[in-house]
Image 1 (cartoon, one colour):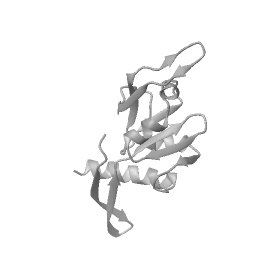
Image 2 (cartoon, one colour):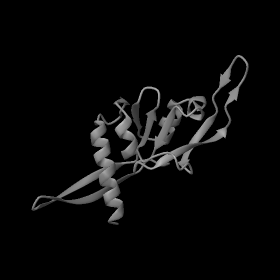
Image 3 (tube, rainbow, N blue to C red):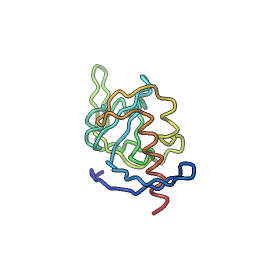
Length: 141
């Protein structure tokens, strides 16, 4: 996934007043940790895949989403190797998921408790709001 930036004009209604805003969109990767219930955000796919070991990803500890909150899954390029006394993590890339059980990030974020790693310093509520606005922007194009 390439790191790209886009802008989107958002028109929203607050009571009787229409407001205009510009949303600066960074292409982000979001990752949840099922053990700590934390959320991580990364600027690139490479940052995310370098940070999380393939064996833990394969074990389902981490779930991934793209900028719009759509689920991603790991596609292994080289497999994990589990020996009697050692484990070697394979390499993987992130692709749109074909798994029907992984939910959208807006739904998943409700079960998470904190940010473990945030490159932007935003709160989880701000991420949730931004994804909602991105969905609104995509639907109006």
